[in-house]
Image (tube, rainbow, N blue to C red):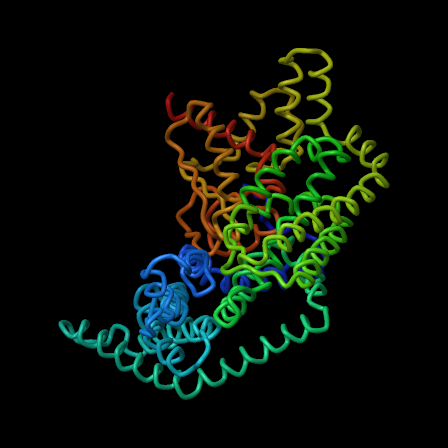
Length: 538
């Protein structure tokens, strides 16, 4: 059975190397963001408490409970510990360490990671987010290797004793090592990174970061960039100055919404038709992945994203704005909630300005290539041609319906390699698939980098299609690629992520799509499930 994730024979070696490098970078970025993403709720909680209760917070002038929670002195000079400082110093880094440890060695790795990271936290005067991202996985990995030394060599009845004491002793050793060795190194690294950011800000060069950030986002490194790099540095800045501009560099929805508006006005075919819905999802839902396919189908528009991003950062630098905590997802709603009280004007202007610039540049690109795009759309897009014909006719056509089903199967090249023949009817498609002995599909997983935004939307779309088809014995869920297992029947990923997904679930069937919201392969999958359901019923 042929799947879309299989390596094409005769592919250039350079292309394979390039894909391997990209997959490796994506995997590393996913690992970094994977330590932060599951704990974003804790960051948001800390951000809200900070915004409300610190000395310059929204509720600072009201009630005796504010300084007690915020951690600043009462009017009579009584000191308060509060929630803000302990959460940023201990809670958030330890959550990251635990998650990183679990990713390496499950619960046992998470426990040792927390013990070791405590030494790093206490040994440094700055919040140890980077320290947790280093020490947590490292401690879990060492624990995993140590356990291998006496695996299957422990006498029966002594397993718990050995396991507990080995983890405890190793955790204590690593905590001490973290205190004296790792903490000073990470402190120096944090200081260097902070100095570099401050240097860029002082020279007005921070907008240049968009040259790397915007292309990185489109390559599905957005979570790695935002939560693996900017979040640790940004939280440290918040602890010092109450806000951070770094939370706005990647999360600004302006560049993406500008591109989508341009496609909605000047695009052609499916891109034009789907852009209005994508605007709402991207701007208000904060799912930036929704505009990535539009950039990928028209690579020149990455220039618009870069210039839009640079404009937004420039405005924020000019107004010295910042957020109190990460805005996740990157919705305008989440951004405004986390905006510092003195930053609303600058933040709002940065979103508007970045959207205007990206819209203007994308509009120029689309207008310049419109004739060529229209010609390609009319010549090559069978679905668009059929839809237009039916629209002109004013009603559905069974003949066109069969043509569209066969055309989608041949164009999509999804579950089965139907391109090897030219079926003349839906019955022949069914016989061709049955001849290839396609395994039964009962669980489908949509996978993306973080397992939330774009994959959740795709799962919802396919789930509704399956429900309308009357199929009840197939589950459709969404997961992060790193959480995939090898007991899945069918995995659906964006075409840029399929190679990584196949490494996690080599036994599954893999289908690649270029747009989670409206892929023709969904109808092909539903058709397969219907035939499977009818066969099992018979």
